[in-house]
Image (cartoon, rainbow, N blue to C red):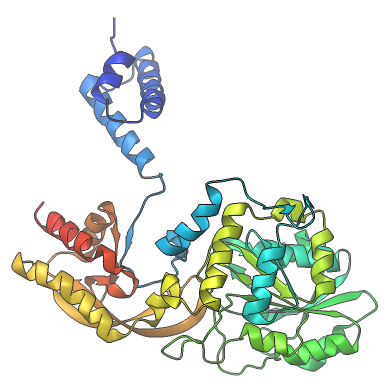
Length: 442
């Protein structure tokens, strides 16, 4: 008779682990090996079963949300959760989350209130926006706008702006699923104002512009400014809408935001609706932010879909504190902005903290200048300077794997493994140095 290890014995061996998952993995593996044995196939012995359980459990642990050291140089890294929230913002927002709140309660009249009112007022202060609405991400914002104003009606948009965002989500498909009828105009590289005018018919509801924030078209090109589209829409009694994707508040260093659409300028120009992500260049929590006229925002609020797309008190609290940090000019509380704007001189000081520890421990490395991207589908093709530590002598692919398995994600450049300090927090410098020592002394 074939004997497999008992579940109790397995549980004892993995005593420090998360018991329910160990039990699930153990049962699956033992059942699989038992079936092999019955069929006369080769099956794992007890020692091999324990090894297999260990591997499976390690895979499970790696799925858990955990901190990483981002040494890629990409500050807004979508795979790493985009913008980081500062401890100060978390602390301020957290005070509200420890208790019941007035999320939908108006203390002035003692009746039900509106969860969006406070953030709307803050956005009005920050951007001089007539009104605002927050949903769970910018794709939801696009969907809500189109479903509200273009259901079974035409939305006119340039072919050169029918973008695909992360995870294979495509603007044309989002538009069609919203109930809007897509009316493409122009060509991939050139669209003129006349194209918008010629497309308008009795079934047209909205003229839309999508900012190409995650790619660029160069060469023989032509585009239409949003203020021109807005004027045309108003002249013809239509709605104009600009999906910026990655909106920012103030210009960034290194001329990164030169020629980028600025929210305050667009609102001053009279653009009816604007939407952007809360966790890209805005540097806050994931959210879709819609700014625009009171009349149009009011109609968006009445759409039944809003119930499915609405944000919770955690998002609203974090977003409110981020807006207030901007209003109070507390930019140091917004890590995304601080890290992007950091000077090369300060980055080199951070590098030297780690370099000193590595030199003392006879680790071979070099300090080098490099270039990086902002990331997160923002400021496509625009690079800016950074400083890195590069390791040679060992295959970069081997180092990349070793560092990755120790929670440090770098990049390979010019056949060397690099740790780019543009995206490394000051608080993590000594932690990083110790991880490097552990890796090289394995």
